Image (cartoon, rainbow over all chains, first blue to last red; front, top):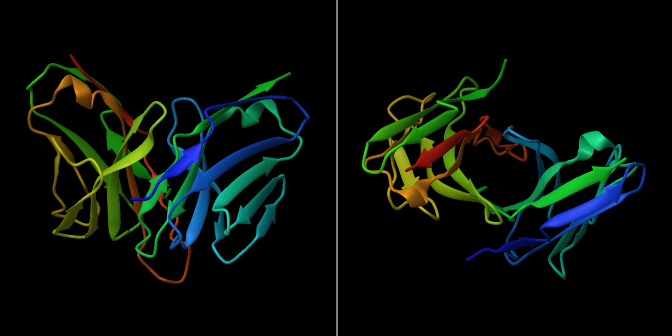
Length: 110
Length: 115
């Protein structure tokens, strides 16, 4: 079955860039997503990328997709304390079933 | 306001006592789904529904039931809860239209503890 892997934890200083990495196995993925979960809250869609794209930029967020290596990354520029959260990578198939990674907890230090 | 609501938000119960977690959405979405979130495992799909009276198993359906009698509601039923069902549960919904990336909207979560 599909599998999505992420590192568990990332610590970054305020103002630096954060890079969260994700690998997936399903070559038939149509969309790949990044969700953010703040403490005590549900998941909020941050951004997504269609599988035939290499890169997508949205304000401070840059998504890079290497389809050959099945590697997805999320870069957050000028990381702020409000960016502290758990970030989930997810891949969606043609039926739009989502398979989630285990989540990366990002801690932003002042 | 477009939203997915879940009730209760927190629940502590004992083994074997039947419970229902409700989920409701006001966006007229066809697709609804239940996930459980456990540390390090991300979200795993329990059941999903493509429309009224159409439900199917996800990746971890054992010990759970669902029903979809109305488009807006998708309750999750635990007939005989066990401690390994202690988890954080999320309901989600989305449109099944083909014109968009079909964002899933998530509820705020229900934290369940089974003693």
